[in-house]
Length: 345
Image (cartoon, rainbow, N blue to C red; front, top):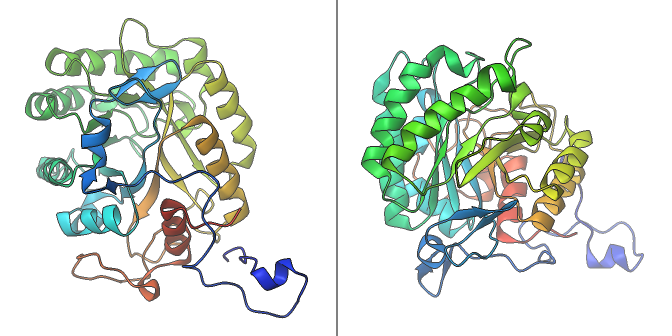
């Protein structure tokens, strides 16, 4: 399912030769920012992030791009949310960002508030490792963020009190609102304004990312009617390369018109999580993100056997990292190369 990588011999017109190794591709055209450079991790180099115009910037006001991995739902794959795995994706995969996806329903936080401890431990581990971390309030099957607004207020109030002084924390307050009756003006924006107010009482500075309608797939309503009176606000967009090729133009339009976009979730597959790995389409998205310094987190670290998971079925049962190529799925091999700057373009 992976797009074949062109060998030097093929470029010269010699046919019939095998492709280059998946782990020995040419470097990308733009130098890749290292997660740790000369022993100094990314958070120490970038410091307190802020938003200026459409750009995520470091504390000096210079545009930056974070790139990394998202966990799968904590109730199913929370074992991979640990310091060993996070350090492995930092050091071997060159990830500068980690996302902890805390579902609300389907066995998530609403029925088991203890799952927030996994989110908190991921923040502690990210602090120790010097990488940025997204705490994701994973609205999905529940559709309307207003449905559990009171629980969100409680969670983000506690979270911001505990970790609001940590420059590596990023809040994602609404993963994928969806449904015909869930609109930007009627549901998502008023919810976001309330949660932002709660967070800002404890944390005046860290980045807050707001979901967009239709599974965070439509940025236009927020572009037309953005949240005002607040700083360091960004807007979520999600894509799956096999399903959303036509949406590249929308993201480009919104960023060019000053909208700060953060792709907190994307996959190499169809939006079902399966259907194969769409390398050509993925690279078009990566070019867009590189051009406009759009930060992203790939979905996801799991071994359930779906195409978008980065591990082979039931790989790394002990969740210790240190994965070999044989333990990685086709998507995992490809995403690792992207993060390491080893994809041939």
